[in-house]
Image (cartoon, rainbow, N blue to C red; front, side):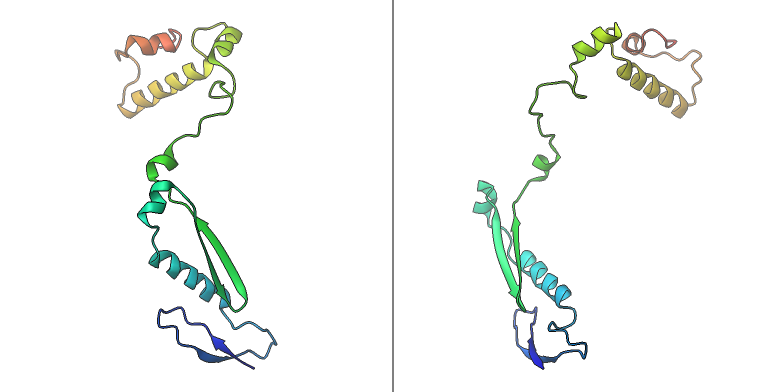
Length: 151
């Protein structure tokens, strides 16, 4: 059997391709060739500025040897992709309001915050070769850490 071999180049001439003895109906590397066509089309056809501005989806279909690949893409600026999606429920960062945590712990500053500050101070001292003696930290650090740090 002889089937036309799809060409990924823009000139797109068709050449006969002999099938393997295995009896497969698909030429070898069809998946790679199809992906190549999808990639070329994506690189060649940039999203038009109007589509980008309206934030609409751009959909396209590429067909080759009876295989259809439908793809959709939408432009998302880097600034938008790095923003945190707001929660549907208005609760604290860990799902509990900070006022509930402080009430439960009977403290003005949650334990997790104190631990984070203590670790930051420890790393700062270690990085600068300070062992704690004579090291002055801002007053708020000592207050947040519950007065447990020597300032």
